[in-house]
Length: 333
Image (cartoon, rainbow, N blue to C red; front, side):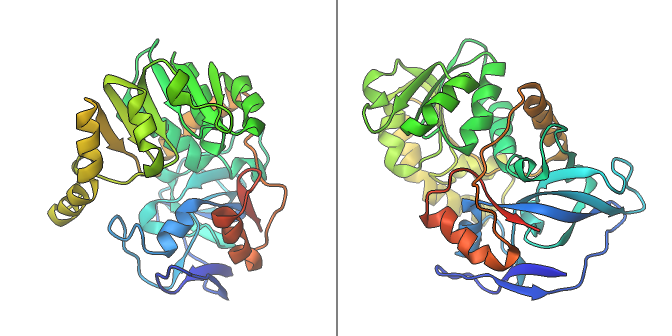
């Protein structure tokens, strides 16, 4: 079978498509024939070595973090899935590999696809869906009536985070471009700021939580709108000591993250708020909950109209990192 592989960490990395053996499922694993694999900014973080402290890899490494596909075969202990089932998942960080014609994945990391979505749109759900789910259910644990701000929330994350937050009873404010306003309001956002014409930090009433999708440059504005005792949860700014302790990292990783996150922790303390960082994990059980939400809300995530082949994987990566895709970028098998 063909797979797109990384041979070494490099700031200008390129993936190579080559023939490798078709995997054989272990007793608890499912063999999936991939229909679509989504391309994410996470690929660039892995390829450049930016997340090697979180997860080091052996090379060559088959890349790819989320997919949709059809069950081809199951291991001897698999009871949750059977051949021809339509499935999707976020691959475990320790065993990525969605940029391939076939993959194996533990049944505990896999979920059945939303029935109303085709394979292309389904492939755009797992990573952002699990990110939103874990942000709310594992870290923030908000109460009905509290207020949330999502800077840059008009993109793919917002498509899952906004309806999930509304389901939890939150008041939701979002900033983004003009193109994303109608979609965000349709999903339930209570307030929308077009970043080109207005500054949310000048007009937004204090909030309990900020879900950061933009990174360090936005940090002063995000801290400014938080109530004392509030929480800033970032997907971009970087890990800190609390992140390492929460995820059970080794002492040297905890020390490294403590040093990396020291500045942002100090800034958070000065504003009397907490700083948290999220790096999304795979979970079939949580993805099944996301699937229920997607089905109930009839959600159809945005995908870029241009599908790439596996041989065009580097062009797909370029579009994600330097272009302006109109939704999730997909590789079609």
